[in-house]
Length: 197
Image (tube, rainbow, N blue to C red; front, side, top):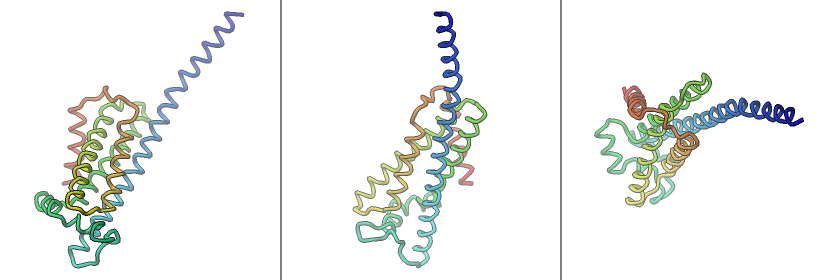
């Protein structure tokens, strides 16, 4: 009787252990699908901001997010810092947001493909963490700047929320210690250079 109970317990444990990686892989893929959704929203928002900025600078009307003197996208988009970044790089903040969202989108797709094939995710996860971590740091700096100049940009704030949400997904779960930081940095920087080119 004890042998039968031990055998049945062993079978149940092996079934649970065999199902766990599959469930974990499915959960990872769901997480990365959600990441892709966030990246698509950020991409759409960045494109909207860029189009509105072009319209403002070519004599068009103020964007819908220009609600008052203190809540005004146009003021933030045309602030001294925004102008300086645009002059130095040739790309406005909205363009950098589009690039960031496109990189996160590509990384999300890559992670789903790797997870489906059962390939290691370590370096790709680290690259995503570098990208989203940099996005959070930049968002904090830009939000602080917005507070200093006394004007809030609602669409910028929404973009910051999407960046933080992507970072939460990137840093949740896996330790990511099985990847290589130098390869992750090359992947992030390489995607950025390709998009900028």
